[in-house]
Length: 188
Image (cartoon, rainbow, N blue to C red; front, side):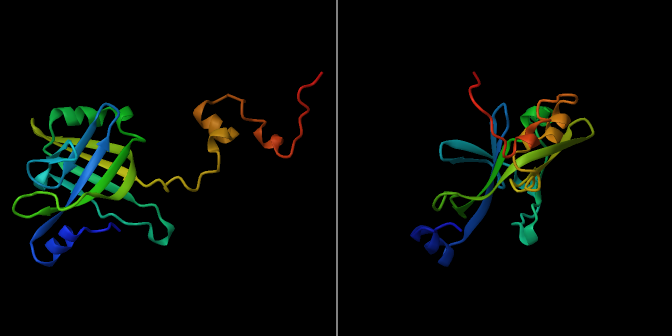
């Protein structure tokens, strides 16, 4: 949990404040920053574009019962550039997405303290749809870093993993035989 400043505590005690979500998508081409409000929010030297009622985030669960839950982001009414980024699979899969939270003054929309990280995720799959000639929507699923926790340790060095990536390659076939093996080096 974040440490709240005296200003935030005072705001929580008496003033009306907004708790907003900020989401930073680290696409390969560029980083897009959005927030769940209206208009542009200038914060930490970046512009955060407001999604208003057009954006949503599924419930964010925190791994109860040892599960690694997915989070789904949905955005409707997106611009063509955003759809182009969504269609480019390389710009999405395996890239970082971070969800922040921030308190804002209700009237001035000025930050009350600094933002804090709610969740760091890895983008997985993206879907997009269209209704009519101009209505576009995007849904993006993201997973926690614990999603692949059941894979074998050092999976990149197993024969099974190597065969999945490069069928017919026998370069990692001998790896299990190296356990407790002694090699004389150099041999003369």
